[in-house]
Length: 136
Ligand SMILES: [Fe+2]
Image (cartoon, rainbow, N blue to C red; front, side, top):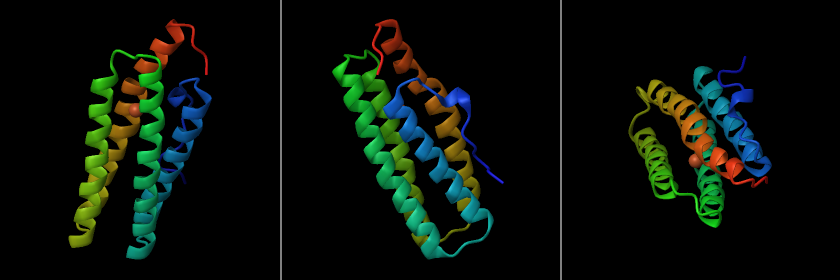
């Protein structure tokens, strides 16, 4: 069973970004499943590290795009990215100390990420590009 399936509403119609979002959602789902199944520390560490690295790469891609097309909400968007990266880092730290409570924190964070960041913040720049007739 998938906890975080890909949803059509995540689609921004920017192929490079949609592809990356698909991978991110799949990674998030894999992490959640591993936790739900009570997988060991090394499995979880690997997935979290992979998620962290891929997230950084993905945010760089988005930021490059927004800067290239002079997106007016760029600064605010980048702030949200910093916050999300900070949360992943904090989670990695907490995981080192004690995994208690990690699972519910993680679910809340990832829900926020998918439902608030992709569906609201990312949608805004894709709409901006679309209204400027930029199709990527
Ligand atoms: Fe974003």
